[in-house]
Length: 241
Image (cartoon, rainbow, N blue to C red; front, side, top):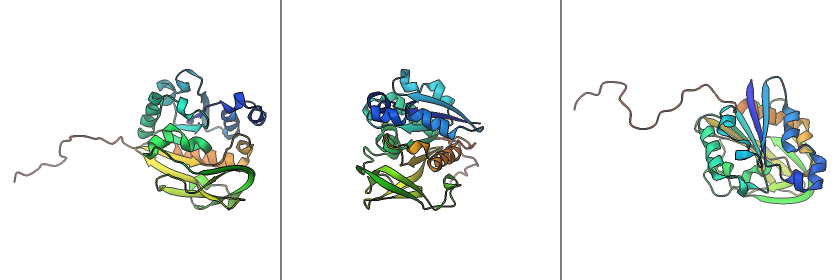
């Protein structure tokens, strides 16, 4: 059983009626309902909860954390960001969705102060091309996923060179983006997945939910030994010179 925590700042849905109409129970609950299966144990957490719902106990009981944020990045406490970072380094998986590219946790793990890109809201068609059809995150997906309307994100995307590139998005206006990329940090695996603007029903799309579900399985911790750092004794005798 993979233990999943879906974190959503849950601000847009409260203050914007147009978003509430699309996601009346919040983006976090839409994703939870869409990926729920017998192999996942799912809980949710939001910004307004004590410690943003990400207490040490919750994170210690989380194998994979999903992160959706947008207008309240600066309201996330730095000590909570540090806590999440340490869990990723210790092996917890992290899936960063849509505008989470500007979140404190993603920027911290990428080692940069900004992961900026171009953007535009114009009800554009998006086609997400599968660049690596052999990758487990793309399992069950055809050559591409087509979304009739989405927010455009375009290059240049100011991220480090990815370990793996799985999806590239093309938009009706001509822009493209590396929209599905992976990284490893410490013992943890990270997947950034672009789609999911709050005013579109993207998180009801079966292919998008399939990718997220595949991402959870891929990012789940591996049972590897924790690395040791610092001064260490030799494994073999060292002959005197």
